[in-house]
Length: 290
Image (cartoon, rainbow, N blue to C red):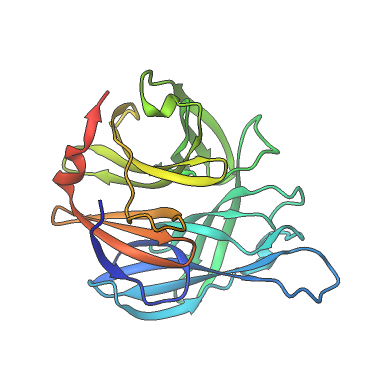
């Protein structure tokens, strides 16, 4: 599906973006290895999140380092420091992964609100699934919000939808089912959430996921869900970028539609971000109904 539109000229990976003013607002992650000549073994890496403003052609207009305002929550020594892999919900809130918000050396999801005027986080809530504490959590995909309740795509085999109370952080699985005779039922890998987009013209959710086998990227898939979160279709496997001899890792973190054109932000080899552009009908035509 190679159709490169733009490389983001800003250091960082895992871009997420939303429509904003006459262009877009985005989050992008920078990560550096912690100095080796330090007393503590951890953290191993230090994460920074930048908020960037882009024009309609994805040229970066401005940026600022997001102050994590760490006094909002206790922070602990962990494998990494700082929030990771933010996915924007709108121009003032996001979902992210964090490790240093718990003392258990486990990744967890968090809901964050931030102020562009103050350039800092103003609220952070740790999220968890009831009776599933103590396991690594990441890559939850936003579906919709009703006041303080958020609905998210949580898992793919079986397909699971969770609802989360943004006041308490407590979540529960509200829908769980298996779609037989699909690639999702394979036993040779696992699937990680990439990005989710609501298609208002058809009242469907378009979702990208990636298949991982033995910690190695294999391919991407498109999924299509209806308003009741039932899987209606799945594409054949695909890659955004032609594989090179040394292999390639792809992480799609954001989707946006405008004038029937679909834009996807994809990190390549944890090094840079490309924006890909497709006709939405071409993408939907690749989805086979199940």
